[in-house]
Amino acid sequence: MTTYAQVFQGTAFTSKSPRELQILKDYLFCINVDGMIEKIISPENKDYQSILNAYKDADNFHRLAEGQYFLPGFVDLHVHAPQWAQSGTALDIPLYDWLNTYTFPIESKFSDLAFAKKVYQDVVSTLLANGTTTALYFATVHKEASYLLAEICAKKGQRGLVGKVVMDNPDQNPEYYRDADTQTALADTEEFILAVKELAKSTKQGVYPVVTPRFIPSCTDEALKGLGDLAAKYDTYIQSHCSESDWEHSYVQDRFHKNDAFALHDFGLLKDKSVMAHCNFLNDDDADLFAETGTAVSHCPISNAYFANSVIPIAHLHSKGVEIGLGSDISGGFSPSLFDNARQAVISSRMLEDGVNTALPAEKRGVPNSRITINEAFYFATAGGGESLSLPIGCIAEDYSWDVQIIDTAQLPIYDANEELHDIFQKIMYLTRPENIREVWVQGDKVHSR
Ligand SMILES: [Zn+2]
Image 1: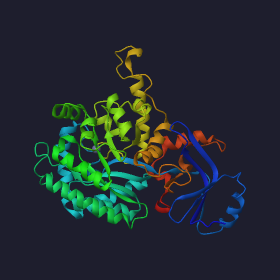
Image 2: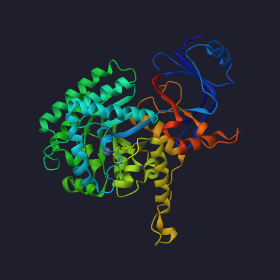
Image 3: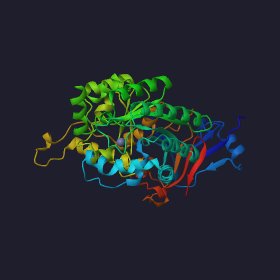
Image 4: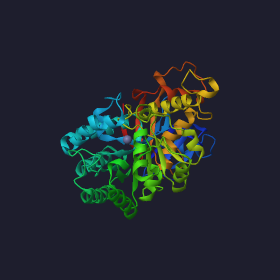
């Protein structure tokens, strides 16, 4: 018989497709030494009983208690780690003012490594406690502090994809917070890429460097071009913000006479490993370019409600074949929970479909076919995020990483011992708080428990 590093027994919820949930009731999940799911065994399988007998009294056997369920760990495709220090602050002012009055002053403090360490340790632990096993992070312009964030992810067991932010444009960035010049920005990025690649060699769950122009306005043409070249040279991930708000969208139109998507593509920044945050104002040509290049959209529904001046037509983009995941956008979004963001994704899509202006007749109020279901929001938070990053994560399936959260429904309003598992899943998605997340595992290792 094959030996496994761990065997788990319990019921799991995972996506079968964007709209369909798969329920694995009372299955065995056999994990190998690399933290990958090697075998998933149904109770009807002939080997079920023999494996159960072989492992059930062993230390590496874990049986879920009654009322507990496995969910895939969440993949957060857009987090500004330093902005954890300002979470919930000043969400009543426009993006441009918010950046200049609150965000840039906070981010500039990350030249101080002691301060950076404090915030970064907290944000990584907080995301893990909220079930986020993989996160795509913007750090700051500071090379050392950005590396520190990657190290903290590596140590705490989170799969972190980290970018040193580039903002070298003197016209758009304050003197106290920007790269010294374009050459320095590119040299620092290259050094950062090499250092994180080195760190990755000793990190089981993986850490990855990400080429990170903050957004087009903050970068010179030369920097954007240089970053596209670096991403190609080292085959790295790429992240930025794209067509987020009226202001940002029209700034790019004025400068390049095209939309963000085509401007970014000109600099080699739209690829299979690219993830673009927000993307509210993508038109159909932009969306086709995303689908052709394999570029993913990070949908940040809470943040969008404050700063994006619109509801993104996410169902439409998805129907055009664009890869989509969810992002918390801390702290444009105040919540570190992808449960909260999945809920908001559904709510926003319903408001887009029905419309919001009661002065209009019902048939003129909304955009038809815009709603998404909670199953789709769950898919975006898990499997969609995994696809966006082209990593074997976000599903509870063979050859995927054992990245899971164990949800305890003891405190949820479940009063019928025979309640349908589909209904229990919906209660989990709408009502789970961090206190209901008992354990979090990444790549076969327990990284959080309460
Ligand atoms: Zn952002």
